[in-house]
Length: 317
Image (cartoon, rainbow, N blue to C red):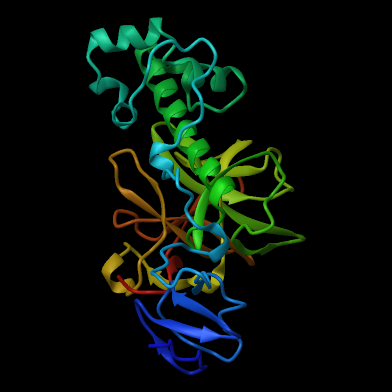
């Protein structure tokens, strides 16, 4: 049985396949079609099926089919730094330094298991109050930093190999060169603000990026702004996303849509991506179930804003 032709004003749901201009497309994000949302111009909504293969399609865009040797980012990692002689399993990277036993810590130290984190610190990556910490806390900092960088590099490698797989993806970035498909929050004066995140003091915090900033990114933490040149920036397509109004403590279920995860706090709390008005512009920041309003980095400090919006995928759970 042939697929129906695509039509505007039609509600398309999971599993739907349509024909358009001689080709078949499968739904990616359920939606009600509009006249300017044809499959050929909305690759985030429709995946083009191969003309030869009439089976199911499971990718995000037709020109990013999974190759035979495909591995997700969680299984694809950059090579170990020169001098690292000890293997670090992926599941071990998920553990805090303090949860490792003393014997394993010594193996990692002697075998170069902290090299990447120490190299990042030596290369200028900002480590929060690093000089005030004990030697053990410094090792914990280096361990957490290098594991975040390791995962960020893996996400970037996957993106380079396969292209966009979702309307919103975090990719590693350095300096002031902002990728063209970065998610825009809005203008501030004569520059544009984008959404970024980075490791700081055992957390992953969301902030703002722009080519006018001293290093490229500004993250808010502990009441201050921190300048960073190594960070992840959010790229994607707003056709598959939307901002949802909220205020005060975030009630995720009340959003009605799935929010895009931004980072994590000290106790593991999920931090979501917020945008909030302040001083004549809209700024990116964080919202969570524990924060009373959004928190944005601005003017050298963190500012609380009661009413804000949360970035969500434009389809429900």
